[in-house]
Length: 129
Image (cartoon, rainbow, N blue to C red; front, side, top):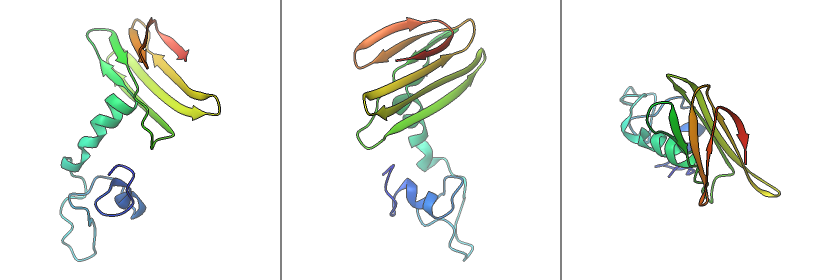
């Protein structure tokens, strides 16, 4: 559903000019029956993109878990979270050598980075795996 360009699919909306999440899969038809063009219900996939594909999860005060889960159909994912302590970023991309992960942790914070069973606690800054 995430990568589907036909109805029902998220990319159907994008390929038809959507910049928000439509209430219906048909979206704007020009007949005045589109309903809400900024509707959360189908947007629940945003949480999956954020905490699973990109892997950003707040975990207590000044601490985060970064555990991205690359999917077979995606070539990259990137997300950021503006926490009270600063911006947390997580991204991964497929390269000729495999997967490259980049994590940015704000000052005075730590994160447990979990990648395919590997686990490492990191301090603030940029970390590439």
